[in-house]
Image 1 (cartoon, rainbow, N blue to C red):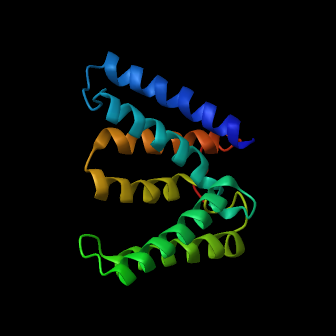
Image 2: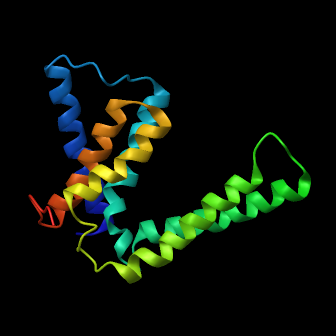
Length: 158
């Protein structure tokens, strides 16, 4: 499946889950402009994230660009002596992102272990750490799982 189709399928499946939670009166989603934009970003990101094991995927190129940009910003912060944001942390996180960008496609085969439901659960943990929001985590996992469904894996565990 191509990236556009993964994103569309992620939106469709996530929208169905949002409707289901609304029907069940589980109020875990708040729909103001900020949250709608954030939810859309989560859907796009997590519906493409499973392809981190493919060298030519959009998410790998996005991480590469983000990592290089982060290195540049971190270095500029250090050189300017700006203390509001820690430039060393930005550099370290960017370096980790760049390492993952180069390691994942070389170590893991495409549609191998990365395309499993367990890795999807692990991929949602950073979202929980940052936002502490169940709704975001549910949407992220549904988007991840939509990618697996789109690739033909219904219950891929290992």
